[in-house]
Length: 85
Image (cartoon, rainbow, N blue to C red; front, side):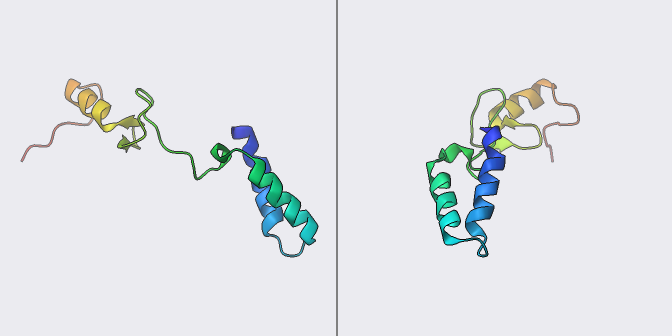
């Protein structure tokens, strides 16, 4: 779906440009409506690279909190240790 991103951006530009004829803007709007919703950049969610979980992803490491916790306790992640006070 990454190859659809430039086309989607171009169609959105045509649709929002008020100086273009109404017919061109309407055609762009119809083409945008036909495109799959997963091509939108705002629908992309960060996912855990190990489990594929979409919730509670630690963005700096790209893994879910469960995997991060297990790896941190095992010592696989350098510079991370359990907080003690």
